[in-house]
Length: 175
Image 1 (cartoon, one colour):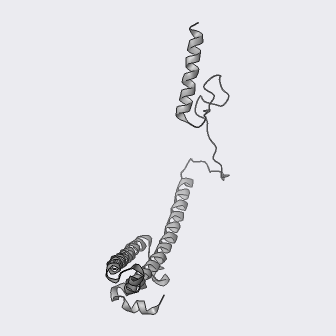
Image 2 (image 1 turned 45 degrees about the vertical axis):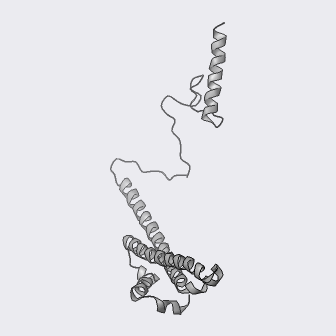
Image 3 (image 1 turned 90 degrees about the vertical axis):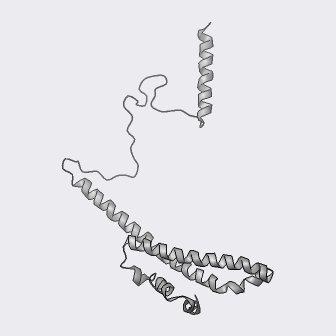
């Protein structure tokens, strides 16, 4: 990015961009990073909106988009500065959120392991075992209750098939 654009920023905007450097964000917690993200997003939105409004107004005055393009360069560059700053903060928020989630996960696992009377959990293989519902085991009994549902992919179609089968059986039974 050109250094000249940084000279056109106000002092508060320059401080905001400086707050997005890696060193400045290193000691911020997740809530502070989210607050910084909001401030940077607000500044970016401001300049994107200015760029669009002034650009559309300039098209009418200059007679075309191509002729209006260079006139609005400063707002476009400012929006780009804040877009890059927003990307830096967003990456840092992602890193911080992942660390917080990992810490919370390990805390919960430790808390679950420290409960008296609980059995130690075996390492999981990645596949979850399904426990059959009470009274509904595969192969137990005959007829409709076999523990699994056979479907062709559509509830209406399945219902229609069952209804036509019931009608056929009722017709046979009435003979």
